[in-house]
Length: 375
Image (cartoon, rainbow, N blue to C red; front, top):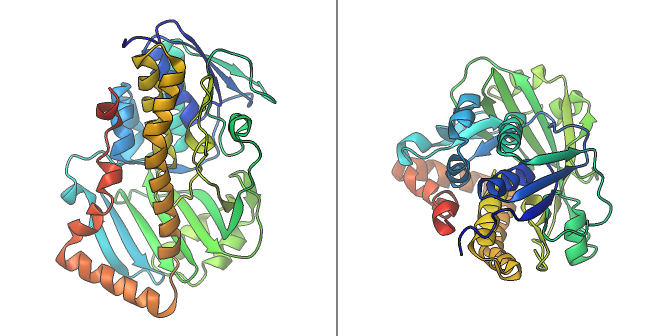
């Protein structure tokens, strides 16, 4: 019975991308939605996001396309370079995937669009609410991120392990630039950068190290440490890093995809269900996909246990595959010695002979349509 969510009360823990997307999707189908957010205001540490077509199909279906287009840039290509700045291969998204909606956006702008849309639709957002134990409500959705208390309630205590990689994230002022992502690949480290709307440039730099850093995005660091780690890189990288005056650092930890996503009353999505390394640019995209599928399953039947079970069965295999692909990329970007030379030579040859074939490796990610899968 489509329309099963009409007037049903739903409580969401977490007001990030996952929580606000699922709140808006629920409200669009008539649910009575409350978001509990521990922060006194919904804000984001400055950072960029790449939104690929699989996520944009959901955001467009929620009516957010025009607002997001005004605050983002189209991503036209991915350019892979070696550490010197020499181009290895350019993957032309505009040519090989014409019409596909790849967008580059500041995370804070995405949050603002989602929050405004949710509030306008009638979602209640209760700020400053620290949740120590899951509230006793008929339907509770955990969108509470890496250290999710709802995941812990469903799965017990779990211990992630340090990958041996540390990442810095920074945003700098930038002149108008070609809207494309650039990846600089060096031994045991790599740097990704792309422009953002409003004259900004996002930088993420990853280093293999034995130093153990805290998990999370909010630990400030000295920009000199970032510059020292990438001192041997060429091309535009030295100029970009010279502009960095504020940077955050975090350790990259590997988590298993949650064994249990729901129990008939509670469900989890986004990072709470499947934290991922940032090497496929799919963390936020998976959360957005989750939100649509979870809501569609709930709206299709009044049997909540059946709906939540279907949601887990639909989402768990796909997210596990994407997390595994991100783990693989973590190795591919950091090759050393003969393996690095051979891999770069193969990419150069592939770029000349069949550049579309390189992109097609990830058709299964980008061509997926959550809206058609669960209307």
